[in-house]
Image: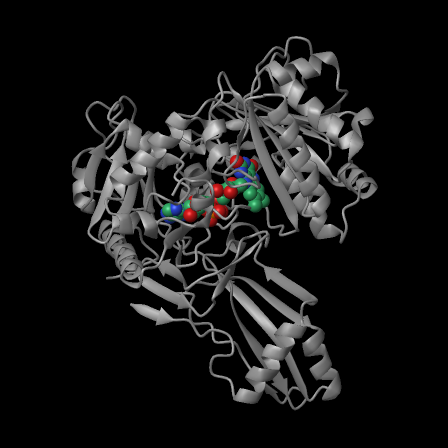
Length: 119
Length: 503
Ligand SMILES: Cc1cc2nc3c(=O)[nH]c(=O)nc-3n(C[C@H](O)[C@H](O)[C@H](O)COP(=O)(O)OP(=O)(O)OC[C@H]3O[C@@H](n4cnc5c(N)ncnc54)[C@H](O)[C@@H]3O)c2cc1C
């Protein structure tokens, strides 16, 4: 089975993609907030996958990330980041449009042990 | 069922400590089709999935490389082609049937899929009353990634992690995968590789070379390990004055002149030191651990939730501290050490409880140079002298390992390797400082080697000079024997190997 990850911004309208790209470029200085499950549960199986999510109309429309790469496993870690570009958009639009980047790693499966065979 | 291969849209990849970014063609996460149960058919299907990825690399003229935890500071796991994240591959198969000549019990063996992390190993082994003989100070590496660069701890009775590995399942081409073990010490029952569809190859030279394979021997799909009965470590940490006697302990592991904390007259199983070169007058931190079959009476369990744990070494300390402060200066480092790296007495736990999680992602920078016993004092004094002239905000760690049989292990010195870790905040000063120490070690003609997963500045001639032409040729020869075409050799190369003239 081959599943192509819904990578960041892939299906966004042009203006939002351009704005997000601009912000990512501007946004070298980032603030991160990371929520990580404690102990072993917080060790991710996957490499981080992320999207830029927009909150529009003062929160009336809020995008949700499409998490399609976790194979029924929980999330090990979620990181939310913002940067100068994102902050600028939020301020200039008086909060009408508020982008932020969300990244996640999926948790590992916990398979039951097996038998290599040949008793 | 074929494995699930998630293709990321990311065209860049960063290692754990974000010390570099690599552009790549394709990053994939590979999951077993049935992730919840370890089965032989599932494992076999995943082997085929990995072969499909190798085929894809060959067809596209791309490099391909296995990725573990991504914890290496060097570009050992980096590739411009297809990066195969193997962390989701975590099947476990305890107690496989053994070869008639194998002298130990089959219960002492565990076969793990490549992506099983050290943390998962510790957790599972404890449940079945077993333990790893050793590991690094923390546990986020995968088993394939850890051995791939020669990860070590500081056991006085054991080598590095690759030294408990007794079999490797390597996927080397779209139509060939091999079960590799030593001819001098066969372990697995012949039928098991057959069941996996793997060609059984018993060859000491090939096995020893592939152990610390730097990702260049194909995709490691499974690792057969020899484990021990569960044991407990009784641990102590003291700040001790750097006396002549302590120097002798560091230099030769001669403990006769000093009173180590813990039961008198007993040789520790684990011994390590952390030295703050800018706060020497107040002594150095010495951690000792004694091995017991049962939890020693009257000892205390490790306290959960503390920022630093009993087994942590210099790199974990620096990682935690660089998470806490934006700039790690010399006075700040000393103050934070006082606060977070505390002395303790009589704490006991299993190996996995003492060498435990590091979730830090601070901008730390780690290097490790191996020198033989007898040259340790000279090496550390040299590093201290460089620090007097050019102080850097960082720490030294001293850890020990018995010589490895792996062809390119950096813990290869006889009678034992002492690893001098130099760990600091990632800064130009730390780099310049370390470079000066390495130059000094070289000028003093101290035999030395570098950890492949930590920062170094080796090139081809330096590798040959330090590890010896015979070892380098043996390693390269084994690679050629296993990767049978120029295309496969090219596919499993990367800039890192080329820079070392190992491709
Ligand atoms: C916080 C921290 C603490 C550390 N502590 C220690 C310590 O105590 N002792 C010590 O010796 N080192 C230590 N290191 C270094 C670390 O253990 C090594 O760099 C180790 O190789 C990292 O393992 P990994 O799983 O992250 O592998 P990676 O860094 O992902 O890969 C390492 C190598 O293995 C190869 N590889 C991985 N999986 C496969 C596979 N399935 N098939 C083929 N090749 C593969 C990669 O291509 C690469 O060449 C530490 C590093 C960090 C960041």
